[in-house]
Image 1: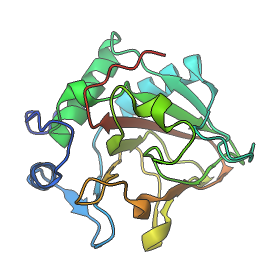
Image 2: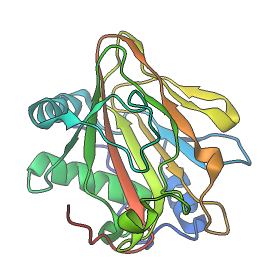
Image 3: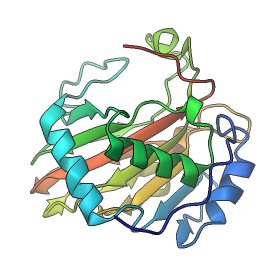
Length: 226
């Protein structure tokens, strides 16, 4: 595995306010920030190496199940990937957790369990935001314990033969999958309200398979158990 490690964790709470988190991320080497007034979005290539990616892909293949969404909108094709929860008792997952938390500088108590997703040919996740809509029918169900989502960290584990890019619609930015590349963004505006400009789409895979890791952080410590 790579010996290039992020800075030690700072335990910056939930990630709001965002300024200390932004400063922590930007202090690390080879981080790219997307120039935009609409949202805060970072990329880091080679966050994890190909070996770690292959091992995580094997875990996802072994535990995958159909993905779901909150506030179902009637579109059965809205999210067609498969998902799995990755057990932090597995040393590989614990190491990945450590690296993400250290990179973000956030309090690990505010993090949801890491998830893995697999997209086969034709599968996608249509334009969506990661936070829970305050007027959504499932808002209380998903936010009553830990609050809304503050930050998202996502890692591409491979490069599909065609398709599978992530498009941030509000800024018309398309990010291509690269093995080991991390994306992270703030789901909130400066005032702490949900930022609709974080709307993004997992575009259809046209050939091959796409694997990603996702970890979300919350306003309050994670206590959900379902």
